[in-house]
Image 1 (cartoon, helix red, strand yellow):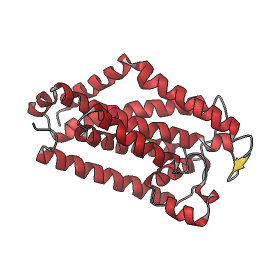
Image 2: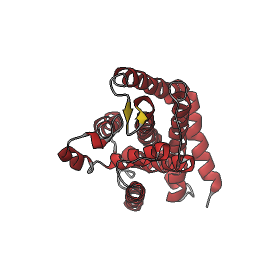
Image 3: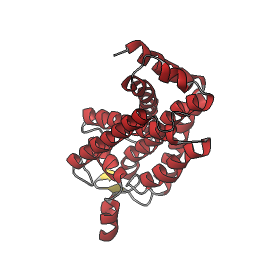
Image 4: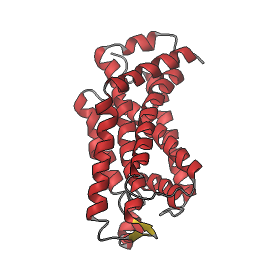
Length: 253
């Protein structure tokens, strides 16, 4: 394992984040805080509790997951797309660096950024509501697994994209709607039976449910199903990345 190569890629990507700290970190935190204020004030005044939890506290895991998913995908996509765009990707591919080391460097940096933002939002939420954590270890575990899984998805999207418009296509038109429809601001048990069944086909439901369980000890779906969904998704992303580097798809001119 070439640790020096991993470190170089990782530090380069993290340095890019701190050069644009307002866009990379401050802006997502402010946006999420506005979500919290608007939804907490407007809807929270009409819905006091959901499954025995105050509505203001109930939406916090969903808001964290909304931002973490978006940031994981976006950071990883831009991280690998920009070297493709300027042509420096060929220097990386020709260097004595394995696929695993490249993926660890880029995906690790993107996941770290998303994890930082998630923890900052978590700390900010304490300014608005009393937020219990029933399973703190599992809370961190779900957050880490989610950031790395979706950072791998972003890595794939960054290789797939041919222009900047395509980079934003999946996060805006796929990830965000799935999160909003995945129980971020409500429990799926509040839906009619037919819609509950349809919602279970949304993979984000399992992520949010497991993450919310770590806070309050209640979940819309079994926790084992949430863990299995994350593991399956991560496995599929790893398989896709392996196939991309093996064939050189969208990497070779």
